[in-house]
Length: 225
Length: 249
Image (cartoon, rainbow over all chains, first blue to last red; front, side):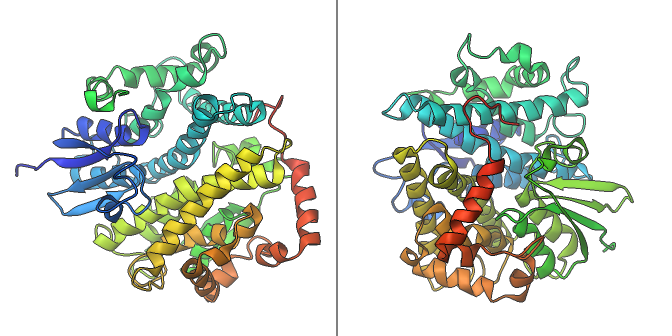
């Protein structure tokens, strides 16, 4: 069966649509990226009939008729529908449940908090809200520390290890997109993460080298306009 | 269906009661282990083995292979419970169905959006060591926006519940946070359909029973009682560390 391209709604370097694109690319699925205008489209019909929250991403899959929102939910849909061989997932237990724990941790613990740090560091008009910036810097470091400790336990100081089982899954890739902003969160000289959290660094840098990841991160549609 | 051997590690918070409400709605037996934030019990090594993130809720169970399984993150726990123990779809829809996908949409919306943002509103409105009016406004406004999305969705077609006309894990995930609107400084009266839904949920026996785990859920009464609110706040501030100079753990 030839698949028709899945439409992915995104906007430039906005992180969460890229999370979905990385998975689409890794699974070798055809897709088109449609940029949504923040001023004219995001909060209006027809987009809010696909995502009532008026946020990115959302997808439309003409192969199944499914239109849905929330990046984590979309990733679950894609692997359940298209990764039937389990290349990037586990269907065995307890791995399939642990994947969900780490996925939910990513989308409730990594994305929202790192996003807040970005806001206070780069976008907010008052640049001196030190206590707010410190709050979110500490939380980002804490979350990275949790990943590092987990991977270290699995032997990640010596070799690349992944969050669940012994192979890379869609959940490692779900963390990757936000991981790529680490140098913006902690510019050189502020926190030497490559030394401080070596298992995390090994994991992150190994994922960055994957051809599908490089291709997706380099796509014109995801660059800053 | 194998028989459950569930222990729920929890505390009286909007995320903790998601799990106990789902367990009650499903009529499952479970043991409760309450964790004390005052003594930072959630960061003790034995618990980090269950949830490496050191947060509640978490759950252990005997899996189909006879071995212990750990499940952490409230959303993941809800998905686990219905997949294993809801064959008759009391609070879920058949996997792969349109309704099931829509439940997942709203479940992630709560876990990635409403929970974290209302939590930040709590922080800046109640706990922050430094009063930052911008921080308070930013997160209260975002919480209100998200409530507006829920309110509009429920009002459209007079829905009784978020998906498919029945209470699902999407509703269960959302209830404890909406019931605590006042703690974040958000007036639920501005969202009539959401308010009616919150009360509809409260009338369910499973919600009523599950919300009082591991200790009585007093949020709704507390919000109306200013003296009680001040007391709770003072207690909470004792174990919530200020951010500056303290590495979060």
